[in-house]
Image (tube, rainbow, N blue to C red):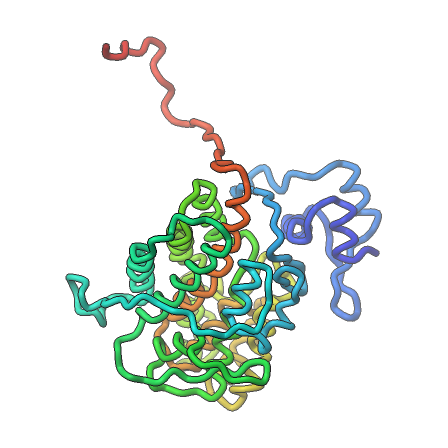
Length: 412
């Protein structure tokens, strides 16, 4: 029997591609007594001798292979530039992890990131409280970019400075001025003032306090900072390939992440969780399957044995928020899903649990996801700025009406 890594090496593919073969019935996965995935050597050798198979003649996905030094994903772990995220969670701030992704340095700097004041109330139309949080992010990003005279500088240090400015401006634009002091973030044995997690907490939760909540929010942002080539990250890389500035790159990512199947997935998972809190796990599961045909927040194509990011976030929530009723509801729902469907929760569900416990709006998950992923989008942009420009130019296969055999002459 071969391990996951051995089987992938034998086939000359990445681990996620191997699991894609499994999901499409091209190779069978076995499970060892200790829960590890194993593959028959003979079956892998037969597959290797035939060359890389087409995943499916009806496969709708477009598979791209882009080299990166940022994030490695396998079935059990995620790492950023060789650092296992399990070692980063709880010991480093989101800001430190962003610096790691952008500039390959994991220092101890903790000067607060500086923002540009944004007056949402000055925007014509609905009262400012009716401007959705995700829309506030996009408005603040545009204003932050307009205020930066160095936005066209694509050197690494300048891009990192733009990233700090953009994220801080978007976070601070989410709240109405209320004089609520920013809670401290305690990581690695020291308390940090003015952290992004602390500022985001009061932007979303106001005066509401949950012991350990800021620390869990920081961990969520660390876990969500990058995830290889997700759809929004590909959008960001395409923008960077056209030499879009850092603010435009983030804007491209925000446009894609707004989709219901990407950054907004945690909002659907939150609705499932809220329903379970009100009516119980069984009725909530039944209603979700009837409405969406799937259970939002459960299962992940890259993690057939469970999303390691969700496990890490749940471990921290259990350690710091263990007596909270919302965690009990989540545990009951996870047991019911495992019993009836056999799916494990993913990070979208863990994020939904965090927003439920914090008592913040249903759509807060998209905001947290988007702000955290800014780190990854700009890190990928920095890689793309080193590549030849405009390298993403796929061709279209025209399948529309055929032109007439004798077209009219072009006008003079």
